Length: 291
Image 1 (cartoon, rainbow, N blue to C red):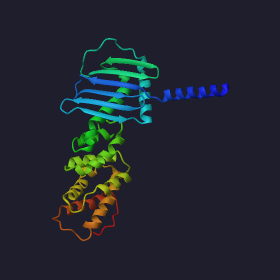
Image 2: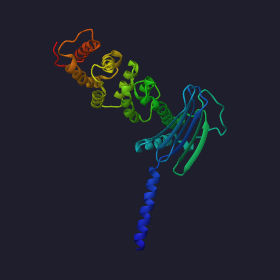
Image 3: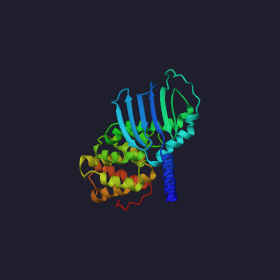
Image 4: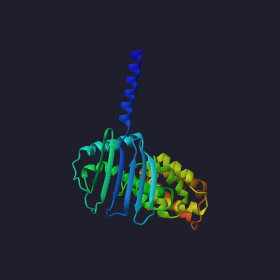
């Protein structure tokens, strides 16, 4: 019996050690007083990945945002803390004067270690700071994803090819952007959101989203979508595979309404369908449509 009790105790202790190792770092991050549109940003990350973000801007309403890190993202944060050597950094003990880069307060508790630092610039801490700043960017774009504003900024935060601050969790934006498509009334806004979706979806998913979102035929919204998708500023920025995923959607619209019979050229959709034919030829896509 004693051996059984001892064995059970060892199992419990081992489980506790494993849980402690799996727990991520607790991080408290605050940045302020820099030359930026952001007046102050605060990020709190719990050991199990719960995140709270508060951002105050120069010309925007403040934002409060919450999200949950995945197991992989928690591991990435732990890796960043270790890579930065946070608990071993030697820094000036006195509070630095504000500079153009701002002031950062950073507290991290990880395992049995805990430390707080206030500094203006420590390049060693970039691995941790970059993750915090991505969460700040994510918080600022959350409302834009569901609305009609800041479409270009949203695209920049999600498209890895653009020079812009990035979000940490691009995948959380997909359902909000999809739901926002029907709200868009401006060409640039719809185009930017479609481009953003190409960074979040496979070509097949993108095609399915368009198939479901396309407005009712002969409505003003339908003509708006037709015109937007055949404009070079939109289709040239979708990427080859995602653009080809649009072709079946276009074929459906053309077969069910535009071809045949030939349409009156006074109709705005006639020009859109003419452009689609040209795009098909440009990309060597045999649509099987009558001339």
